[in-house]
Length: 151
Image (cartoon, rainbow, N blue to C red; front, side, top):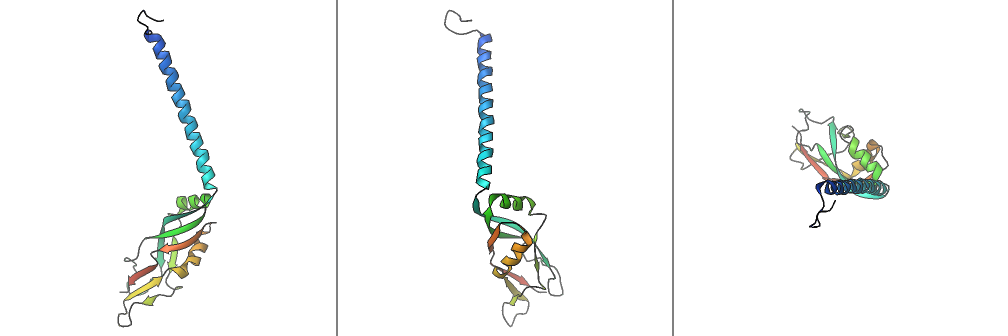
């Protein structure tokens, strides 16, 4: 009901406010729905991304078998469909890649210093790809060289 000054009574204005709130909720629902469809569409395309992935070390040489000075995670540059990369991001912490020192070649830093050595990561990319068992492929690994000390 309208008053003489042109304003509406409180009863009618609360109905209009409820209608606006309802319209906002409907708009937000469809906005969320469109975002979900957009995201699913973008996952079907091939993308390049970087991923910090855990790594474990086995058969570490030397008297002390700890690999404390080696990184716990490597930066893997991946190329593949978004679905496979998303799956890898979600399951990555449960399935780390393994660097087995019994199967790789590591080089001494200098001939005089027997304790300092390094590993070049490029030859290990094919091993990492087979360990990941996914459709995406590793294009590079950072750091490209791992330095460590034998004790």
